[in-house]
Image 1 (cartoon, rainbow, N blue to C red):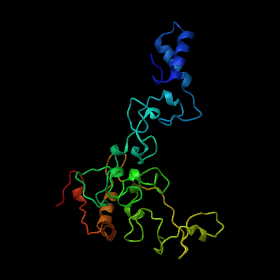
Image 2 (cartoon, rainbow, N blue to C red):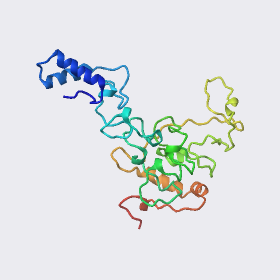
Image 3 (cartoon, rainbow, N blue to C red):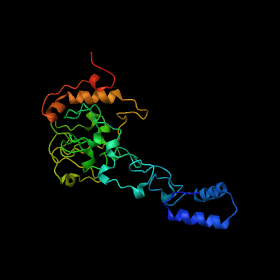
Image 4 (tube, one colour):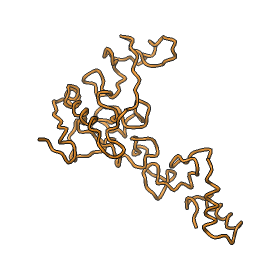
Length: 264
């Protein structure tokens, strides 16, 4: 009989205590006593699955980082660089296994295969939008809206900078009203008394707009594509923004990018 995690010293001690206390009790009864004893709300959530009703060493869920079922986060050897950012912890998959794929309408590089994990693609970062590095190496650990997901989850027109050739998602370098460069000390211009520390443009004095979470994901929880998002991404790639950022005029074909469909 093994209660909780087989590697837990506390589990072995409590198991031994129950055996000594009730030497003639059947295995099922001892196990039920053990589980009932721990089925109360903990002061701290489990570090592996965030459940409040068991301790980390007793967690039976797969690893919250990599998803392997033979260990928990306390024994996970994956590097922080390989841990995914597509959703709040526990993700239970590494970056290379992320279900969020690179969007062909916004990536400047042709991929050898139809599906490439967005957070692993170095052609254009899925977090900040700047080409040349992958999302897993980006300085942004979360989306600028404050939620734990990849920034490409927002509609392209919502995160596009007002400066045509600027690749940044939710750009903080340019004023989105007058397109002027935002100084690093732009907050000094926010002299009102509303306790709002949003950056203010030193040229037009417009405040930076808040970034809200996306209303619709690229892929719904049931696995179905959000074609509204896909069409918007393709339109963005065919627009003046895509031409300015990619350095050439591109012609993305929405139908050719949908598995199982071909253009007429």
